[in-house]
Length: 134
Image (cartoon, rainbow, N blue to C red):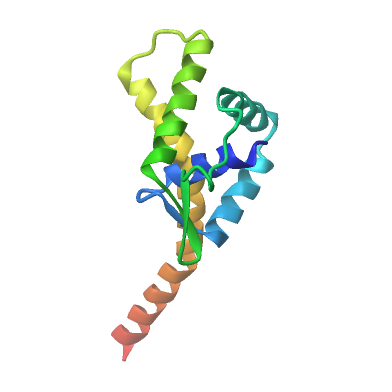
């Protein structure tokens, strides 16, 4: 698994491109244990930009306990993925299927975020229930 490509992919999956370190670690662990496909994919993407250094090249900025992908980071990731798509034969697919693919790529990060928020929502519901009873 290529660490730098994985960081870019994780950060781009968040709506504002920012993730705190706990979220990054959790998503990284999830992807690292997801199987050989992810490792192979990140190696292919990393091969498109062999001198990739996300911090010194300004693709990722360190901010207040987390990392944020920059516009440059989004551009280099797009470039890697475009070249990857050109190098691999692609069957014609309807636009709906490509939208589904994009959502599927973001799904692990969103799942992790929802799991993290679940205890907070339960706590809030319990407080509302207690307030309603009293």
